[in-house]
Image (cartoon, rainbow, N blue to C red; front, top):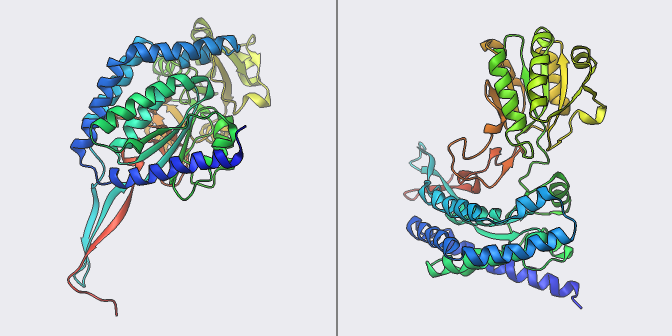
Length: 422
């Protein structure tokens, strides 16, 4: 029988090894890190059949356990997934190494020279659900930014994650990095997570990636700083001065292109001045795509067969083909609604009125705000950052897509010539 002491010892040993590896990684040359990432990409391609076989065990177990088709789809490793993982690893190689970047430098009157320089955070723990590709993404970004990473994937992906993490670990070690630069928690007991989240002596940052329930649980338990977003309740506001064809295109993309992701639109706000001309038009297009509409009295007065929205629908992250619809009196009401029901993730305005747009962009407090563009662009790749480890709605350290620079912190390097403080 496994005791709590055994679990604590298991987690602490992983933490100790990660801390030692982080010291080496922090000073590893870019060429060595890139060489490790290329070796990892080649290993994923070479071992594709064994990865797919391990994943098949997880898929069979998931089906037997009655896990839904959408989760099984995210869990699956296919030939396409293999290509995407290897391409993702290679893409990180092509990105600039943030470690050592000088963010600012200046001289003081006493002759001191001060530089503000990017350095790795140290040890990052990543806790995530049923997406084995996150294992490769997190490993790539952490290694390139000079951080050791401890991975804890979902139980349903255990065999896939073990197979993937072990081959990535071997490839990185063969390329000259410490084996403990990348470690996977292979035990499934819930107590493991509690121990991991209180390992302050070894772990510097926790990043949860998954549903709201997982993220809230991690944030509640952790005694280590957590970078997070609880949910993505994203809005598109169609203003009085909107180009209606443009608005139609943006709303459709924001809701339909990939509805089960955090930057998909969950609510549509329409200025009352254009609601009668725009709402029937967009409602018809959304219904063609299978979207269920839930409206307030103003929206239902225009499209009567729309479902009645309840208070629970406002601020709901549906992650499905469901959209809350509200007719608002003006910009004030739209901004107030977003402030009350939004999640500070991604919000958009469609308008040709520059003054209105600038006010929206200034006053809506979200990690990304958009003018005449879909909320679906809140993504590291779409922002030109390359891969990302997640999206943060926090206000400390990082906000929005977390790419390589966001996985670093900085220190001040001060050079003198014998100065002492009087």
